[in-house]
Image (tube, rainbow, N blue to C red; front, top):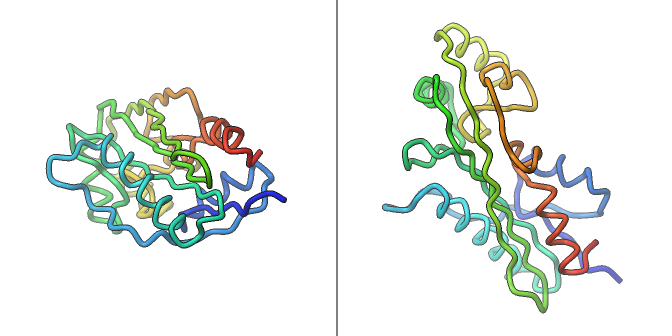
Length: 190
């Protein structure tokens, strides 16, 4: 009998991505403080958070396979995550104009009798240089306040970008399915 599969995230984007694999799973909120620690790089931040999210849920369900994930944009060493509101989103988008940033998407799988499996998939995101009216129109239309860096590439956010480069096209949406599939095969969940 396969072990229960739990997604340690309440993100609808991650849930929708995981549904693509056709596996039964449940969702549980990990209850982890997502603040970047002083001196912590964005890469270290998303690695730590993916592991902490998976570990928090795995502690409550030791006989399950638990998936944790986190995503941040690296803007000069600052981790840009979910803006939460219009003003913060606009500020983030203004700061990214005309630049190429790295979006780090970490995935962690914790399963019984296995060491935690953890990796970070980088995605280079090149932003167009756009006037405020275009940014405001996008924010009014999409309300991407729950997306890292306020960009939803799966919707109108793609119009803000001139290029997206990654080995895993699902990483930018929030859950790198190629690496996750590798991990699920390793722990016998696929």
